[in-house]
Length: 585
Image (cartoon, rainbow, N blue to C red; front, side, top):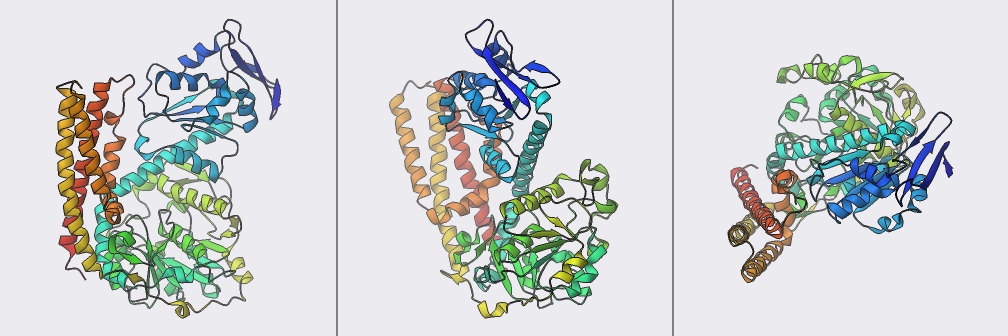
């Protein structure tokens, strides 16, 4: 017996079988985790009859002496991904002393997580769940663990839900905007070609506070103090006008949105001579109209690969213009980073500050039914609870993890409303302004340097078009070979191994030939990523438990055909986008 966090953990010999069982005991109750008589049978029964497929990701909440893990390895697949979560390391290590469990720690496909649920924990758990398997997850929770570690596992369930929801949001975003992203990069090509290098400003503002101005409902509470703020001011397109109305010219305007609505919400301020920091795939209308100096950052579109331009900074975006502003502030060395208008919630049942809205463009009003249908309550800035949504919570989680990843950086939440951002210091904006007065901001123009182009961007796109046409030809051949391979397995049932081996060799050669185009590999992946995700997440493409060699061959042939079909479609889409937008300057 060992005592772990006020819980006595007992491991003893089972009454009927040559196995061990385990029970928990505290001042209130004693309960077996598994049957005292037949623990292994009990554990296996908890898995249920539906075992998923060979690619199913199993999340096991409570190791329970490892019987469920071994059952999955023995009767589903030795390579199946298993994530085991224990409340603490001591409890896991105690169980490792029994049933030859130590050998499980050596398996690369079994992941053990335990202890504090922080940003590192969330990141590891997220990394263990492949995007292609988000529809293919099974969770097993030992009921006794829930009784003794209820709060811990409730948090775990929330983390799992967040990971899956945010991954789905990301996939849906890619699916919805992938073509638009690519179109915007191509239409932004001349602006990117003439832009300045943001990396030359890296760490230039050490010890200088940065203010990130967001459009949350609380912005109107304290924006009037911005005129006395000494430091770097970063705004989004929606908050540029309210800041200018205070007689303040921000240091940078940051944009990220690819949609045309961003052009309208900027509210006629494009003529202001304010440096612009933009995603390479941001709305091309706004990029073209904006009159200030331009810096670009690389995102999913990967403009360096696409346009052959070097010197474009790579900075984490995080999903919103506010998170991008914070990343930029950290990138150029600012400390502290001060947030205003960053509600991450529906303060006073509003979506945004009224001085940041534009009713002329038909956007959602502050009494939108979106608020009424949102049912997620989270911790509020001043205590209590406040209503939010999954999208807003994703930004909140980003800020919390950003703070956790940056232990030497001070983040001050001066929003004075909205959600509680854990790790940030809550302070009134007026007090922050009064504290930071003796600040000298560097002259950024002294560090101006243009990005570098290998070749003119139009020449680069013409070259890529030619390469992708060649890839389409090879992919078409690979589709035909995949069909032949399926026929060999389906009709001849693997009876002609020589023919199968020949087809596989030919497919391997074509695959190698396509991959030789290393310079365009990421470009192709960018274009067909949404199609690829749809194919890979489909449960119909998974390896079934106990499938025969013939069934496996047919499945692999179908997967191969779908892969090359997607490559063909991706290349065609890319070429069409170039041809449709080649005259836009």
